[in-house]
Image (tube, rainbow, N blue to C red; front, side, top):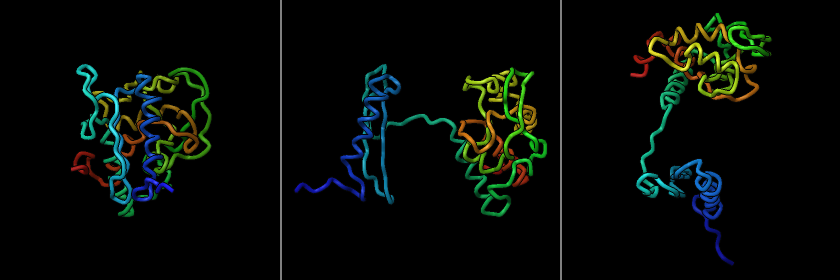
Length: 212
């Protein structure tokens, strides 16, 4: 009988399905020009695959060493900063956020209407630090352009502006409803920005100084 094609306990034949999935559902449909996939286990690179194009204009194929631009890399750094402070016993994951931001004690959830005339209802429970770390806080982003709440974020320029500080962001968010009650759904959001504010509060340092 033929021996299974296995490395580090992983079937290479099964891993090839990743390439087929990306090709059929993303590259051929035009959702992605190309992709490079790497699977590792126990510190050992088990499988890599480059497919599609790294440069559409020049028709250059993707290579295993193709360099990609990655956005939002401040997010994992901010979360690591929070977990360092967790290791130091500065907070607990299930601490309510209003313990550190008192104005967030009675956050509401969107029910109907448009900014500034929202109809809201009470959240089913308080937002926790864990909710912020897992993007299950009920917060959102204005650029998502899906709801009346993110429309309010755009009007108030809460996705970032030259004058928006973490303190101002936290103050303005206190006056807006959440998309949903904390812990009930996942939504990419300004949760990590709020974590940055908490890093400052817990470390008693400006965020950039703590990062340094």
